[in-house]
Length: 316
Image 1: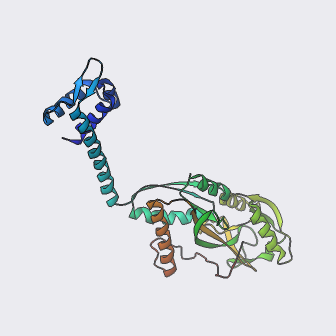
Image 2: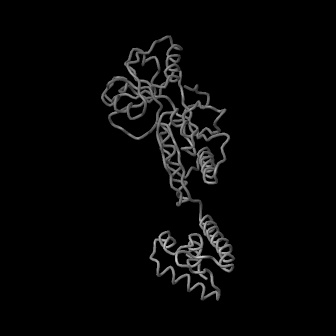
Image 3: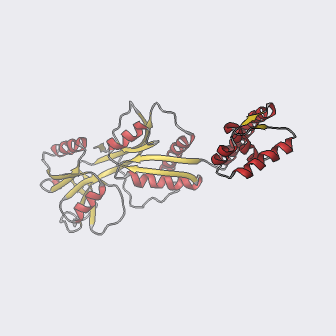
């Protein structure tokens, strides 16, 4: 008995009609009838009593149906086990915020898929609220967000810190000053664009209050692309996380100091939800990458000039 003949037999036994069974199997009726007759000849038993309009399964046929289902299930299970021995497979759905998150995730995906090439990854970008809502609804397995996040509902690991910077047109006089740092007081009186998240705006206002200044905020923005476009046209100076170290000759980025601020990113998942093996393996992989980065043995490319804020830097 071959497995294909058993699959044909199971469908015929379920339909008890050759025409309907042939339609389910997407084949014509005569070859299917021939396959069932050949199976009966091979086994030396009658599996069906053939009526004018339908079939009646015999006792021998009913016994074979039970065994056939068991054999086919075992065959499918064995195939899956053998495939899993060759490496993880499946799909990862990850939602992430703008800014640094896509660059971080790209490193991990490159390394993870080099180990598990059968894994596919689906990414979705949005605001922090949108990203965590997709995670809550089960539309994402994991999310990469900017802290803070709801620790009552979400578990997570801190994965990155980066400084807040001033993004300026290369033609701006402040951009032409020497050095990669810019005191916050020099941004007082300048036209500023800031992130539109309410908590960020409040934090930036308090930041300026510390130095006795009130910022001249002329607009807000929702993503890094907006910050780049506005700064390139010298529409104003954008206060934004560093995000990327990719060179852009039209822009200059300076780390804001006096006092310096940083932002934290976290990889999070639903606290009370069962994690699949694939999701657990990805989390472990990210943790291993972070440990290798701390030891300086990370397998991915790390730009030589990447700036990491001091540990005691305040969060914004």
